[in-house]
Length: 238
View 1: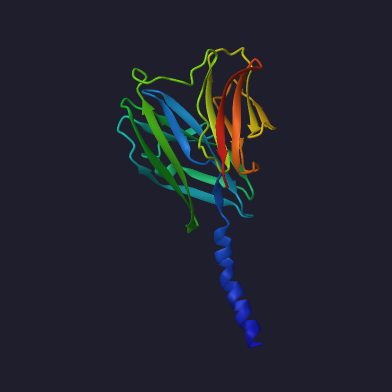
View 2 (view 1 turned 30 degrees about the vertical axis):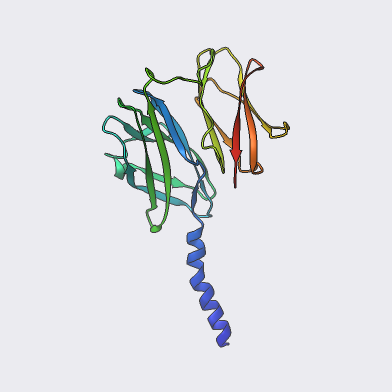
């Protein structure tokens, strides 16, 4: 009887610990902004509520070395907020098991060539120990002194990032010729086809789920109207 009481007491104490371990997960690894002076970029933040409960989070802090000429905006659908000035207005509610994909981070590059990082910390409004952090890096280039190796005749395409990737990898692009058909093909190290993605001219980024890829080296190739333009490496790790 005494042993049973001890076991159930231990189990009762363990339940909150197990519950706290299950939370919202950030699936967008290493958000990175890289662009020219005065440009603006938007990146998708993908969140997964891995619990069977409704979760509501408030933005607690914005930390980092953001320059005075640079601006950060957090957008929930079409509604955008300045996290420096409108901290109290930013609230995220995720249904049980929900995969949130309409959350965006916008970054204005500013007027000075520089680089740095910042992060956004979100906390559960009913449990301060339940939190998650979105991390971002940026690099601002001066187009007058840089050589752009990603600018092709019909499209501008970034390198894949983060690289290595764990859960997701992202490519940013901008069509200069709206009529061209562009796609990204991914092959294994020995040349076996893994995935193929057509680039949408109405968007400016491609998010690739690599969580089902085996760890190792892959090659991604840009095709324009079925013509091989460039091939680069993608590293996947667990």
